Structures are given as C-alpha cells and as structure tokens.
Length: 440
Image 1: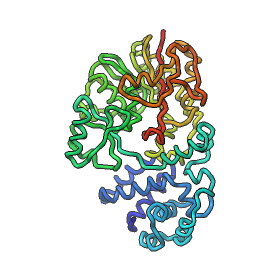
Image 2 (image 1 turned 180 degrees about the vertical axis):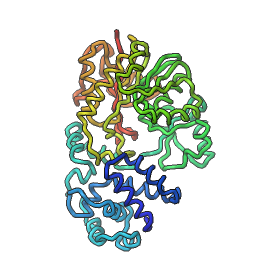
Image 3 (image 1 turned 90 degrees about the vertical axis):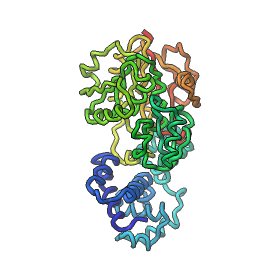
C-alpha cells in the first residue's frame, strides 16, 4: 500500500498524464528525473499504481462518484485503485493521506456489480473506441480483447542472433537470477511474466538481447530480408525493428532507418553499437516526400512501413492512449501518404510490409484497399506462407491466391492474407500487417 509521500507522487503523476500534454512514459520519465530521491522500489510502486489507474480509469471513476460520468480528480482515482485493486479500506486511505470520502468509495467497491454498469465502464474503454470495436468484432470478442488489454504486459525480449542463440541468451539471464521462457511464436523471442532489471544485466549490456514485444518481432520476419539486399525501415523510431532486420541480414547489405525525428534516431545509435551492427544508415527526413527518399526510388528490395497510428493495439503497455483525443481520419490520411511514398522505393519484385499496432479497420485494411486500387502493380502475399518459412505457425488466413490481381476480403470484412495479432488470442500486442509485392 502507498504511504503518504508515494500516494502524493502517484496523484501528481497521474494528474500530469491525464492533462494529455505528453504520453504517459514521457511524463513518467520527466517526473522521476525531477524527483531523484525516489528509490527504484518507490518508482516501481508509483508507476505500477499509475498504470493500473490508467487501465481501469472508467471503473475507478465510477467508484468515486457512483455514476458513469468522467471527471474525477486524480487523487480520488488513486484512492479508488487502492480500495478496488489492492484490497484497501478506510484505514488504508487515511494512512495514505487521502482527504476525500473514503467510506463512500469503500462502500461502492463492496457492493459493485460490474454487470449492471454501462459496457464502456465494464470494459474500461472510451465510448468512441468501444463503438468501433463492437462494430468490427462483436460483443463477445470485444469483451475478451478488452480484458486482455486491461492486464499488464509481459516482458518480451528478442535475442540478437549475431551474438547468441536463444538458448545461450536464456542461460545468461538465468545466471543473473532472471529465468525466462521461449515465446510461443517468434523463434528468437524470450519472455518473463514479471518485470525485471534487464538493463543492468551482462546479457543486455553485451548486446545479446533487446526488449521487443513478440508481435513486433513477427513484423520483421514478414519482411523476410536477405543478405546483401537494400532495405528501408520507413518509420524507424528508436529502431527496434531496424535492429532485427539488420540481424536477419547477418549484418550485410544496407538498412536505411528513416524517421522524421532526429532525436529518436540518435537513440538508435548506441543500440547499434551494443548489438554489433554496422550496416544501418540513420536518415532523418522532413516528411514522406523528402528528397532523400526520392533518391532511392526504384532501388530498394524491401520496405517496412510500421506506420504512425492510434496505438490501440498496445493499450496494456500504453493505457493512457484510451483517454487521449485521437483523430483517426487524420491518421489514416497520413498512413495513405506514407504508404504511397514508400512504395516508390521498390524495385520490381520487391516487397513492402505495411503494419500498424492499431485495432481499427480505418487504419488497416481500408488504407491497404485504397492503395491497391490506385496501384495495380502491387498485390498482397499470404502472410502465413511467409511466416512458415521462418518457422512461425500462426492461425493466419491463407485463402488469398498468390496470383490475385485485386483486393479480396474475407467474410468478416478483413483483407485476406493479412496478419492479425490479438492480445487475447496470441498474448502479444495487437498488430495488423500485410505484405505487398511489386509485380512490375
């Protein structure tokens, strides 16, 4: 249970995040940097409490007021989380320094019947997202998906095969007192159910592992880069998939890491050095039409577009996304522009993988369908066949003919042959991806 100083810190941090000025992880980093006297254990307790509040915000707000309306203070939400999620009571809240009506929160928690509350409160989803998920997946699937997204994520690691095998990396972590298990899908993944000080281990410092969700690892496998090819990671960010692509190419050929943020690309450089990778070129671009993009037109073998998106598939890691204003239509327009520009890089016979960590059709199949209708030289490839060559067996729709010249939809309205990962089905973040081949 939180003592007064930590209760105050959790309240301050939650209030800052709910202000929407910047994402939760950035706010958290800023807060802890401004409070250097907080020890590692205290920071962990504060972070765990705040993330729990963000995941279960609507239910916790109901406990503070007895209604489904929003607007509870951060202090009241933290207090409700202590009662509901940590089995706290009136005395606990008093000891923590809560100044509100503790008895009312405790009584509402004791008599709460979630099944009688609005569905958005039950599932801790904002109405705009709930409506879209229900329309796409139906209530049963949406319930299961929301329940999975409201749980903390596992700690997934990717083994750097330039330096170690999966067994060797697992043994290295076991020696450090951090046992791991193989991920079920990725052949180079390791998983811990509990958080751990991974960054302090010899295994991490020597570049044997990187922190990367298992679903994200599968995206690089879908690109299927070969040695000595020219590959572009079009929206590289801090470079997790760039590192994986370079390792799959055995540190040969060239990988161009494009991003509009030079700061993000700077964070990639020490990761490259630690991993022992020297075939990556970091290129900061102004936008998808940058002249540095145009110079490579028609020269590239493979392109990965992990497009900027709503992030709704990562809610277990980034629950604050649920409570931020998101312009899905604007995002989709940006995705269309990026996809069209990235496609110009490919040689005939080249492959482009378009991916998002979004659950929404507007950002996924709808974007790809529009692209295919305007670019007849491209056709989708069956994701299952590609992944099977990389020793990955997933329940992926393989009904798309390799020779299909037009977009085909499955009965549920999704593009056939696409890869769709769901947290409640696969235990990963939720991802969408489709591989497109330039035929001529």
